[in-house]
Image (cartoon, rainbow, N blue to C red; front, side):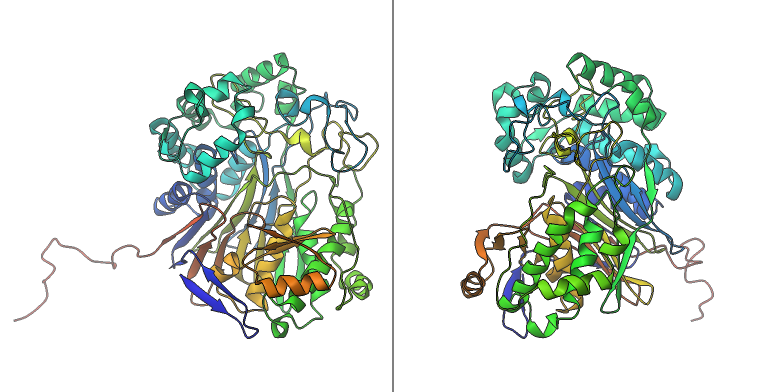
Length: 565
């Protein structure tokens, strides 16, 4: 364990250790997924190949978080310096309408809920998935190994089984009542009516067969092909809005990242419909005129400024949280320093303000993330999910596929920016970031956690840039979050600091953790990479060192040749 203390005297202890290597680094939220990525790097794949392999493996070992019938986004930096965001977020089916669901309330906190939880649990909650197509397209465009090689580790773990972590077992137990409503998914995770326990073997034979089909035929077998027909027909019979035509029509979108500069570090992130890149840059712009480093990590002065900036960004979030194909999103204004200068006077260093905002989204914290890099300069930082824990909490018979419940993210009230419309993309707080100094990457990071993702990623940037933390310290450091008026403060923040924040007017709410397990890589000038995962998930960094034998090395003929005695 590492102990960290800055000049202001705010301590915390790192529970995990970092890993350093020169030839490649993989950080995911499950050790088997990190191992799959390293296996692919060792087989000659690049970071994009390794990222895709790790995500397929995560669909097996983190089935509650991610699946091939979900959605997500990836920020990719290629060895030649190009950077692109591959948007594989889910879309609303063509049969969906603004009034497809009946809301039960016009006010918060039940504003997004609907009659019978139809937009949340079951077949009507399923939106058109983007993950499978996006992963396969990323591998085809930017990778070098065949798809079957990238899926093989996932097939192996699905067919042979793996031992449940306490984390997965806890998730199954928490959601068991909903899983019990569907006999197909219950047979897998509640055998004999009892939730699987930590250490038990989970075999997913049907899902292994599905992955073999995809490995052989590619993603088109789902997006318009025979497997897609089986899935769509089953969902339609069960009352879903999704049809085979929706799968056949789905397209990913390549987007230009958003960019900003914070104290000489260029920060690159995803654009709308992901809100995280814009929010992060807006908050960093607000904070740049304050000497955050001098104020110190974890002090009441620093945390007050962070909380106030978070509230301003939350109040503006509705303006940047929508599908830009349907809504005019003012990205350039939101990330400009001029706009930050207009909003900064709203921050009172001596008093908490009321920039209250209700985030009209049900985006779930149950997500996963991978950050992977190779020695050629390729970097992938990607957040993927099926939205809620176990998605729609059903399973497609005979396939092992757990579909998403992304319809839960659309406003069930017609006429609003986030209202349900055919073909509209869901919105997300995904904040996959790459930081660069003088054009050279110095960090890449991301994490799960829904609305709390941008706040947590932004604080990691402060930890690295202002507080001089190592990458391990940056991902494990205590976090805060607010969208007003309640301020969530992790319990590791000292009582005295929490007391001072309360005296400033913050409604302090101590919490066990803010957001989920961050996966980060730091890049040194000598070419070494340091991977770090935090205590908030099962994250594990794995690196690739060593290399091939020195050129000309041989043990035949005798390696002593040419030596005289």
